[in-house]
Length: 114
Length: 109
Image 1: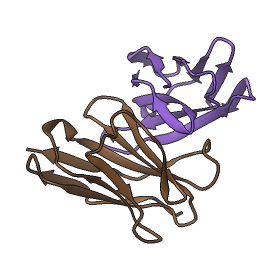
Image 2: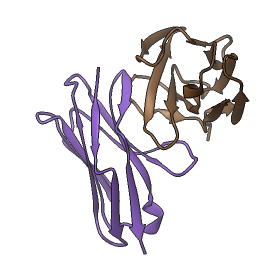
Image 3: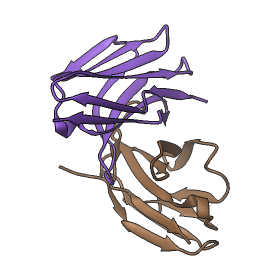
């Protein structure tokens, strides 16, 4: 069964550095999402992406964050200048069609900012 | 924006008992309500979902009820088993999905 994949599984970076988290959604899916989960806390919506543009973003998704779908398969989340509080698990998710259907989550990337 | 409240934050039951987790939401435009199970260090996994045109849905030992007027929905797990132990999240969606804070369910053998 196809799955959403994410790389790397764990990223360690220094404060102030840029990081790019990568996701490969399921191939025939049309809607893509990024979420963040700080250790022991709830899953927080960051951004949704459809038709090559952002459709919704949360208050967390400020101008330090950006998303891109550079080719037909990858979906990336970039954090320009990481802060200690960006340390979290980042999940990518995708939906085949229709915004209110099951979201398939990737395994996550654990980001540690030192 | 949408705000989802979830209770209780922890729940401990004996194997075979039922467990109930409750959520409320604030945005009356939300029309999709999934429940996710998350084991330690793993991704959230959908266990059941309900849409706003339905009041109740059941899948084996799991059921969800939705009261649109009161803006609350609940997860019911019957005949709990130790492998049901996990963190459960409710969510409400109208394009962007907002999660509750989670309930840590422990099922004691």
